[in-house]
Image (tube, rainbow, N blue to C red; front, side):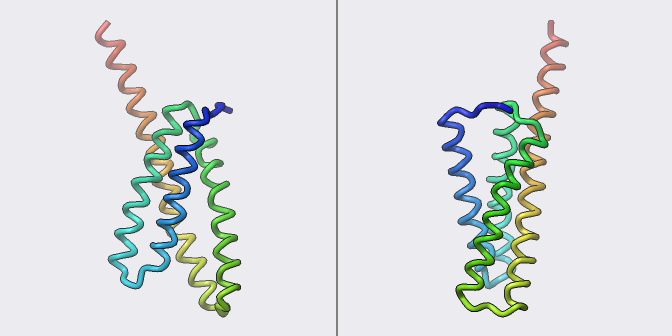
Length: 132
């Protein structure tokens, strides 16, 4: 596994915190358009995370594994908060299903960002080899 520098770790943590905060705004959105806008903005952050992961040499599976380490505690915190607020089973189920749909879209954005960065790097290699 690639060892992250302190600066890289801080930047990944910052993006993770932005994703968590944005997911809460997405879940709190009362209007579908507001939720879609929030999720679109979050997808950009997630794609950036994937691009950076590719740039520093993380494989796609390592990148996904890192994302999943973010996902589990976030979903757990939602369950704890739903319980604290006295949500009934239906409300908690709807919250979790909405959260999972959003997180799944962010995972796809992360993977896409990683794959696109890898493809760009491969294209750059081909271009560089062709110019020699």
